[in-house]
Amino acid sequence: MTGDGAILSVRGLSKRFGGLQAVDRVSFDLMRGEILGLLGPNGAGKTTCFNMISGVHRPTEGTIHFDGRRTDGLEPHRMAELGVGRTFQIVRPFASMTVAENVMTALGRSNYRGIHPLFRRWDTKPCRDGAMELLERVGLTSYAARNAGQLPLGDHRRLEIARALALAPKLLLLDESFSGLRHEEVARMEGLIRSLSDSGISILLIEHNMKVAMSLSQRVVVLDHGRKLAEGSPEAVAADPEVIEAYLGKGGIVDAAGGV
Amino acid sequence: MSTYVITVATFIAIQAIVAYGLNIIVGYAGQISLGHAAFFGIGAYSAAVLSTKAGLSFWSALPLVLLICGIFGALLGLPSLRVREDFLAITTIGINFIVEAVFLYVPFFGGAMGLGGIPKVVFFGMRLKGGGLLALCLVCLALVILLCRWFTKSWAGLACRAVAADESAASSSGISPVRFKLLAFVLGTVIAGLGGSLYAHRMGFITPADFAFPVSTMILSIIVLGGMGTLWGPLLGAVILGALPEIFRPIADYRMLLYGALLLLMVRFQPGGLLGDASVLRSILARMKGGGGRDR
Image 1 (cartoon, rainbow over the protein chains, first blue to last red):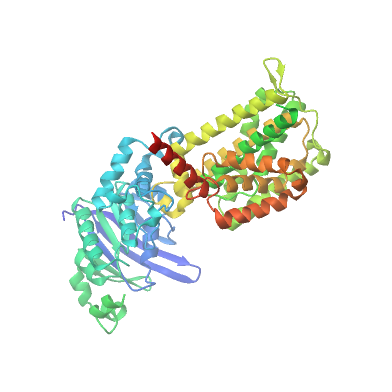
Image 2: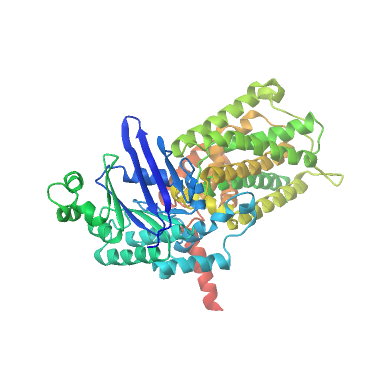
């Protein structure tokens, strides 16, 4: 990947929920065009990190810079406008809408400010075409008119990616896009994420599936109990004794991957 | 048409207008409100005060009435919409009781005796009564339905649907939930205000009890029965709930019981309402349409 600086810089990021220090002074950079894996055992603070980057939570301390501007504390819809797309660990489709309408909703990102939204129609040909294009990219065209609530999980995950892509994101946050997928769906999802990366989108992914995470990510950051434990290439991190101790346990990488 | 039928039809039209307002809040934006009668009342009292104390006509007061309702909708909606679901239901009930109490205890609003002497609507020198006023209410109702149709086709309408379906997903798709919930709330309260103004001028005399909590329940029953979030549901619900007590005069005293039972039955057997997705009526209509297609 051609890296011309960081698209996302996280410095000293902390989040406290009452007495719980969910994230503790975490710092890392995500380079342009890079796929960075955010790993760690359950409760390590991965999703909390995600939520701070995407604006759901305001950090207790620390700063986030995205695409050259400081963004910590901005609301999720502002982050979406700036070009941060995300998916959810527990899928959140707009269940009462069709698959195409789900994508069209996000395609409207530039129409939700000022008084425009009251005077512009959403169901237009360009918007429908745009949605179909994105559904084609994730392989869901045949379900376009289907009610989104009725899709199986794997398709929900791809629908969420299509919806995130509708924001024309510079950065994509993928929260466990592989969890609950069948074997053949995993390979398909891996291919999709690679193709997104090839098209120039920077990707930060949280992953439990070690095999996939290690093969997709160019670099990984490992969190444990809210702290950054290690950072580096997948090979280096997988060989780090501290990581094996804290995250993979005594059983090693194979058991950890199989145990999820 | 007999005076009686005209009277019933006028009330049905007014209730339908108010129900369309609530449908935007509950049906489109997914925000439960059990205090809609408060805004119906704010509209009616604004119209009454402006016409009796400030001497304005129905027409010159109307923009002010709508503005007042919109302002109160925003003021009361902003804090309320910060809470969700059950808490929002309770908060909106609270709003209803507070607004009713203000009408009841502030002498300016006439207390329990209410406000009287509200003039009839004058249209090109003609005082609208009976059929004339019914026509005005129906025109207003038609305009409100058109407005709702427009709204569902706008980006704002889609944003509200997204917020109703999933707030977190909506906000990560670039939609500010607060903004669109508030927009729906204000739009809904302004429409309730229109209904209130028509009601005040139709009755000539209003009391706080006209806008009490049971009225909110009734308006909610209308949209639950007809089909929340549908275009024609509020009209169908208003016609049925408005006409039933008239047809079954003897059960008029048991209105609340009827509404309660109806709500339970609907929630159990037709949760989307009579015109909702997957409802019996919908599938019959679809079959009739399909049959007609085959004949041709």
